[in-house]
Image (cartoon, rainbow, N blue to C red; front, side, top):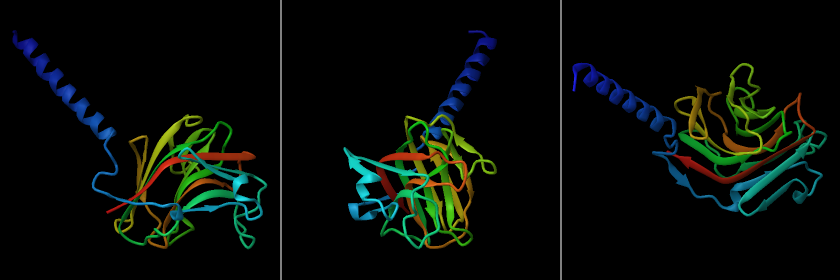
Length: 221
């Protein structure tokens, strides 16, 4: 083997090693080092328009939780002035310190737009720490304009969300389909908890909004 060919072999080997490491990193398990927190149905509190029966905004069949809401629905509480929602509020696992993680597989049908589908509720400044919002099929961090589009073309397909909140470190990390998408500063400590479903934004929303969820898990460390 000539010197030239040996150099090429070394180069290609190094390139393959780099590619393998990058690939492994991109599909790294975000839950590694975390402890799974067992959930029961008690932990899945459903918030829906206060004047609508549960079965007209929520269903749970074959492991899939389907949540939907209309733009002209009432809020979840007659004393609330917030936008319409049908959401799962993870109950009994509020936190104010440590590192916590939400994991779940979501599905948004074509046509739903302007709805928050996952959030961390609570913060020192503002009502929420994190909101992931679907706008025209794209996954946005909040409205997307300031903090960016995290993933595109998410209509009519299952996708995996991992949302990690390091309260003591003051940061939030988001993975979509196993890919690290963003790490950003949080809004400070508070009475914190996870939610998923559909929560209408104040403007530019579709009349009908829906998301589906399965395999929801909570981790901590």
